[in-house]
Amino acid sequence: MTAFDVSERRVWDGRAESYARTFARLCARTVPALLDAAAVDRGTRLLDVGCGSGSVTVAAVGRGAVVRAVDAEPGMAAATRRAAPGVEVRTGSLPQLPYPDGEFDAVAANFVLNHVGRPLDALVELRRITRPGGRVAVTIWQAPGGSGQALVGRAAEAAGLTRPAWLATVDEEHNFPRTPQGLSGLLAGAGLGDVRSESLSWDHRADPEDWWAGPAAGVAAIGQLVNSRGPEGVAAARREYDVLCEEFTSDEGELVLPHRALLAQGRV
Image 1 (cartoon, rainbow, N blue to C red):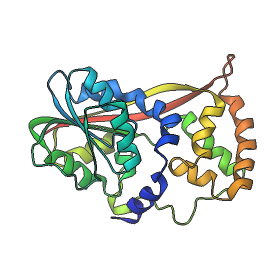
Image 2 (image 1 turned 90 degrees about the horizontal axis):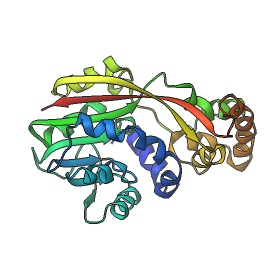
Image 3 (image 1 turned 60 degrees about the horizontal axis):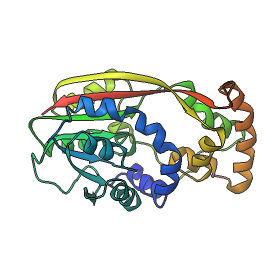
Image 4 (image 1 turned 45 degrees about the horizontal axis):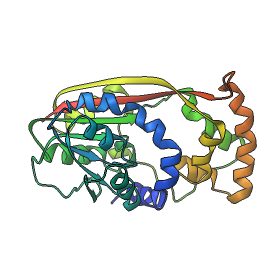
């Protein structure tokens, strides 16, 4: 594993429940488009890679697909088992998954490439386990993203918090532009054909307390930043957050947070 992979395991260890209560609803927004891109229908043999809380698995089962799921974090795998009883869910991490060549008609990875140290190798693995003619569909966060994506980071910066030294980034030689062209190039480089990529934009609505709860609980890299100076730092960031929330608060008291993601698909 790369240093980034090691830090990701540390970031997500034991945080499945906190993720389910907070950021999972945001990430579920792209699921219908992702399954459409993977051409998931009745009888499709689908693998949900990085299954998280199970949103992709549950939606695919609802379409009549024959679904299996895998996640690197045991707590996430357990959450998907609870959400989709009867679905085979395994623990495994990219770029080596425990499935034979050509096992699936389609593979879907919702916001998974953001969390691997070697994205190209991960896509090569997704291609390997997909049958000839099958589809691979992925989403990632776009960069630059929507203004709502930066809210908590801005609060942490205003509070003087800095990224923990152990929290690695993707090595330059393995990174790629988080743009439609960059993601398309990555899929093509992995040997996929008929590659298409598009940008998805939406306003995520959340209660300010709920939106803060994820980072405060240490969820994702932003949560590690918020907690980098202990309770005192969390409190300082919260004060800045409360001020910045005014930019995004609706008349009903909800946060309206613009987000941008990328959706790409390719054929084996």
